Length: 234
Image 1 (cartoon, rainbow, N blue to C red):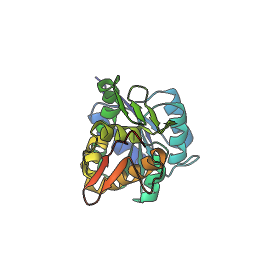
Image 2 (cartoon, helix red, strand yellow; image 1 turned 90 degrees about the horizontal axis):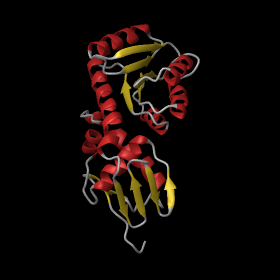
Image 3 (cartoon, one colour; image 1 turned 180 degrees about the horizontal axis):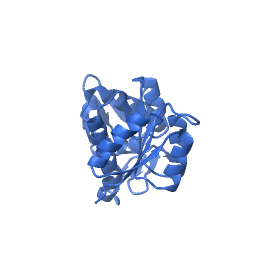
Image 4 (cartoon, one colour; image 1 turned 135 degrees about the vertical axis):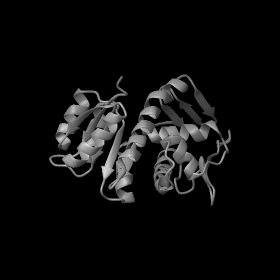
């Protein structure tokens, strides 16, 4: 029985072969694309359950291809990159990618990331499809992903929403970066904690009146972050 279909987009045939073999051993069906344009075509017509996308590809680079895919279909994307650069990660997450794997990598680790991303994308809505969080000036609806803050509707990426939902579900509880990484990305690799910092920064820019002096997502120095509900008079 198949665990789902994975599209691997990479012009390095050796990597495609290695990753394909690993994921087939885990019960996944595999499709492959050799360039960005082919990746967009397959992702938007063949409905894979997940896309693994290399950044450096001919015709259309991986980030542009990911952006085109996300604009048409709701499919999780894991980016592969030879550069461990926080700027690249920021750009990728801004475009809505779901995870980021730096080359060289362990195929076994990538398989774990695939499982985690698929588990989140499939199970989370089933758990909370009717829940609503409401505080003064804040309303968050899980099923519709509606976020209304200070009277304005805010559009968040999947990860931004999940992070806000988690913290707003536990007001004033402090979450360390590692805890957020484990619960939102289901990753236990401490080197990935910069991912959390990037998303906190982006989330604040969208929901705070002043991102430099946040009222909702507070930093507890040396510990982590917490959601602090606004007071009625604010």
